[in-house]
Amino acid sequence: MNRKVLVTGADGFIGSHLTQLLLAEGYDVRALSYYNSFNNNGWLEDIPAVGNLEIVSGDVRDSDFCRAISRDCSTVFHLAALIAIPYSYLAPDSYVDTNIRGTLNMCQAARDCGVERIIVTSTSEVYGTAQYVPIDELHPRQPQSPYSATKIGADAIAQSFYNAFDLPLVIARPFNTYGPRQSARAIIPTIITQIANGAREIKVGDLTPTRDFNFVEDTARGFIALARTPGIEGQNFNISTGTEISMAETLDTIARLMGSEVRYVVDPQRLRPSKSEVRRLCGNSEKMRKATGWSPRYSLEDGLTATIEWFTREENLSKYKWQEYNR
Ligand SMILES: NC(=O)c1ccc[n+]([C@@H]2O[C@H](COP(=O)([O-])OP(=O)(O)OC[C@H]3O[C@@H](n4cnc5c(N)ncnc54)[C@H](O)[C@@H]3O)[C@@H](O)[C@H]2O)c1
Image 1 (cartoon, rainbow, N blue to C red):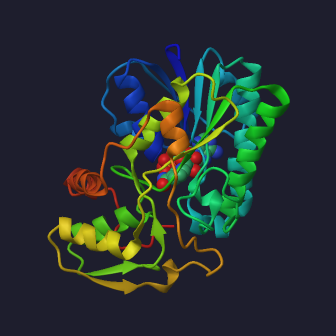
Image 2: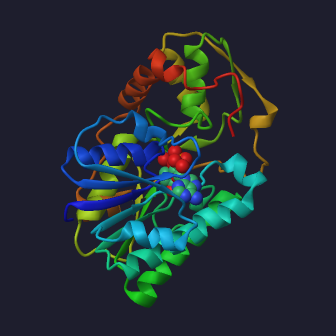
């Protein structure tokens, strides 16, 4: 990788950590923040002011804009997306536009600008409920939500650009990622923010599904490893720990780490339609480990401890509307 890189979705949870890590490693980062009239750059507002950061504001649905921001970048990390599953039930059109057309625009821009590598971000949600574990990259795709369907579509568009035009792309497929700055629509921040605000009856959805949780720094390191490894173009890679834990066990672990005795109450609006709920996810990252040398550094307990420490600081906790269901 030469020094100038572009990160889309840099204003978001994973993108802000990736941007921070790239800056710490000496890269010049052009960071895309989703345009809004408040001149607010999301989580980029919270990252330490070190290194050479250029923030641009715009929209990946705009193809000319995508081309303009990709110019003179050696590497593009494309993370911008609509990602909430419940909101995808309400607004599937927006998901098609942002996730599929946005990825098409970024692939076209990378091709036009002669980018040396583009990392396209997929998700473990494309696999749906595991038909076998651990899930490897050959597992069938099952679109159990409009979100998942649009990510399957985005992966396919990206893959077609490799096959048809030799676009030097790699698909990163993180399993559930957690850590500081995550939206409260995700299970771990939902629980931590409720407990931290003194609630003793914690509102939850279905506690039986299992997940493979990755700490955000490990996920961000995975993206950089995929950008730096030569000879892996056209391939997709799981970023996962290979461990599996139910929602109920996750919540018990958080309550124990926070020294809190709580009761869980199922809030019906947090339940998903039964065919849409992904019941089991546990990833096989052998391909990633062998190709890039990457492996996760954080155990779940270590990652949760760091996450709780961040969320329970008043300046962070006050940003979350813990009493509301966050789609
Ligand atoms: N969080 C997870 O557990 C997880 C797991 C697997 C994959 N992913 C993928 O990782 C990527 C980042 O997810 P995240 O968890 O950081 O979510 P996030 O919502 O925090 O980040 C996504 C960012 O994309 C931006 N965005 C949305 N629409 C846009 C548009 N039209 N133009 C420009 N920017 C736009 C948003 O402002 C947001 O900050 C996504 O592609 C997501 O599908 C996330």
